[in-house]
Image 1 (cartoon, one colour):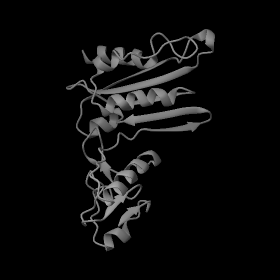
Image 2: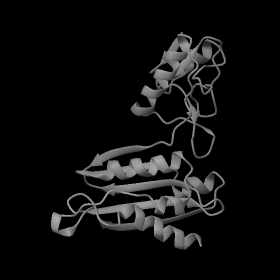
Image 3: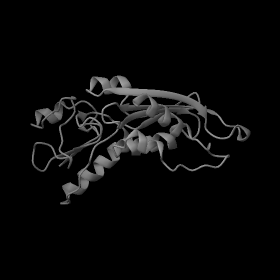
Length: 209
């Protein structure tokens, strides 16, 4: 049996004896199995592990729902796949501008017990003579571990690529000095010699030192 796409209303699942987690969504293992043997849950009805905090979260996104569904479906047919969790990476377009987010904001990080340090920079996404447009990058790191725990990118085309770079770093528990040394592509029509991501990382390093 596979439960998926039920949305946040889990009354039917609860009535069937399926355990509901602290978020109000269905509690699952990393195999997307519920407390009832042979019953899996995936998508908007299920909670999963947050990759930064290690706590259960309910973040209903189409990208993660598809991954969760694939794991649940595979395991329902006898496989042993697992879903590691989510960083909550998302992007929306407002008035032609992309607003992208991953991991934790500074406020969220503080509420989760981290000692967050953050910085925000604004720079051109590519060379000025190739009609570079302003891009805003915010990075958040934990002071004690120097681990990157979140980030935000605001800009026009290119915001999606930059937030994906931050998401990969957050997922892999990268320290800010490691992130600052990433070998990112450069050519004037597409990027600056110093990408806004790297400028933000350098500023954050200084704040952590």
